[in-house]
Length: 295
Ligand SMILES: [Zn+2]
Image 1: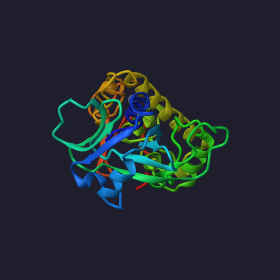
Image 2: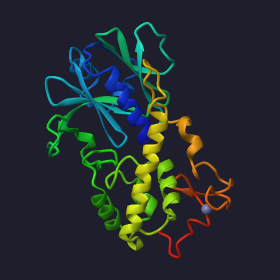
Image 3: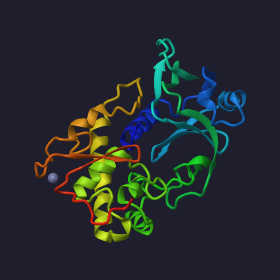
Image 4: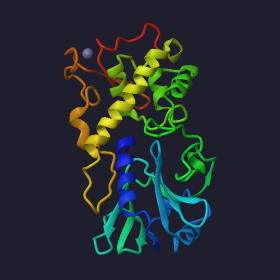
């Protein structure tokens, strides 16, 4: 599943290669990829054709392209395996091409998705303009309205996120993954941030003081910024890609995916626990299990 840094890499690629381009034609190769567009495939195509893609935006792991001439946007749900590719019209189609958007510069924006959990939809923009950013598109797509700001958002407030997490009565990692409290933190970065902050994933948020909450949120922002720094230059000029494999920053992970290997800080073998149908990786010595873990 793609995480925030990968999605931001894609957003930057789209901003560079797609912003300002007109849509000349749209082909839907698999109707499942537009199932979230409730008015149907014909309406989806009709609302894109002839429009201009004006701004690539992101909140958490949601990505959208604003359309000219009205407060609507093309929203991409990447799901588990969704990819957005910008390729020349002549490039061969991959096996899992779901939607082709022909652009007026001879390139195509292609939505490719092996498992078809993702998809595209045209959505109304809602909400009000953030203060002091009149040149930004002031709205978010309706399905994104409940998503909290992510740590890369200029309007993100650390203290608000700290308060939101401490208000929720749950386990700390669940709170970090809750996109309505703070967005963009996925399984990998939650584990890395918890390790940096020396906090156990099952720590009840009710017992978390303000400095500890600040520490883990600051660590999450830092590890994501580091991953972005490593991945931000990895796409070539005509290939914008996200696939969730995240191979480019694996080498800098301290605990995630490293069960049995030594903790980079103390050398204890990293431990893997089952967590919400996935895994949590932690150091048993740096991140001792709380006496009363949250279930
Ligand atoms: Zn350790």
